[in-house]
Image (tube, rainbow, N blue to C red; front, side, top):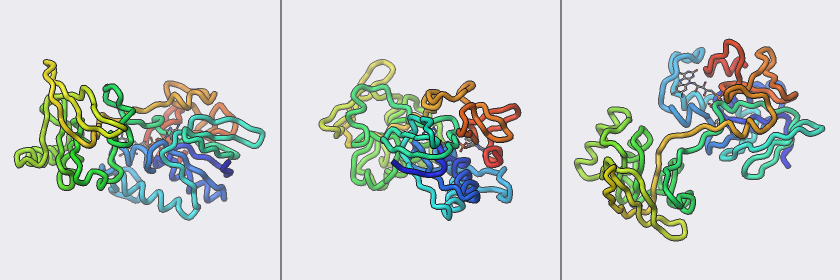
Length: 303
Ligand code: FAD
């Protein structure tokens, strides 16, 4: 059992700044986040977008802001539990015990919920037996590009992640095939231009308009992916890995089970104290709501 003063649920920009503020009050923090990295929406949804409304930064990319917040928190030595979703927050005589889906347990005096729109998770493609391959040959994000070196890779999706990774992996993978249900891609025009050039010179193969239909393989190792068009015509693509980029879904159902008062997926707070309906449990950032609330990073910092 870990023991600390404060557990912060959510390592988005607001959770990271909360570490700093708690540190200034000499409170030790453990920070839990379901994503494998810190930064919340900034890192997961728009790392390269410039942000213009952070004081003293006329412009800063979302990822730069996250790096600076992490640096600012570092002197207070927070303990991060990443890739773990908080499933339970139970009241005890001393405070709370926070439990994650990886069975980490942290005893603390108070909890600060900085959970944004809830836990993020990938939208999974609707194909059978997906779970047999997940983590071994089916992935929803690239944490290490080298994993795909010299592999035959099928990428599914038509947005920025799918297009950017098709372009990026073309240099190191044995082959890259991009499957999308439409002929048109919804990504930055510059990236789509690069993709089209690569498809002309054969570095990336485009399979449109196709969707994923089924997977074949053994012991978690994919051997092929079958895709189908709207008329039911099928093609089988031999592959070592599938990267599916169907966007991220948010889920607040875990939070709603902790006995907190919620309102349309948000947690009402007293804006003067950030107190929720549970004594000792506070909420800040996008998850917190009150009259006049704005879902902005600056607003979360001030809370
Ligand atoms: P989040 O950033 O959502 O982070 C919450 C974290 O909590 C997530 O990492 C999530 O995984 C984690 N979490 C949730 N539930 C659990 C759980 N049960 N267990 C473990 N972890 C959990 N704001 C601005 O001020 N300026 C801008 O220019 C701006 N541009 C934006 C552009 C886009 C495209 C988007 C989508 C948003 C933009 N925003 C902008 C809004 C801004 O990103 C949010 O206000 C901000 O991210 C909120 O921070 P947060 O820390 O409260 O939550």
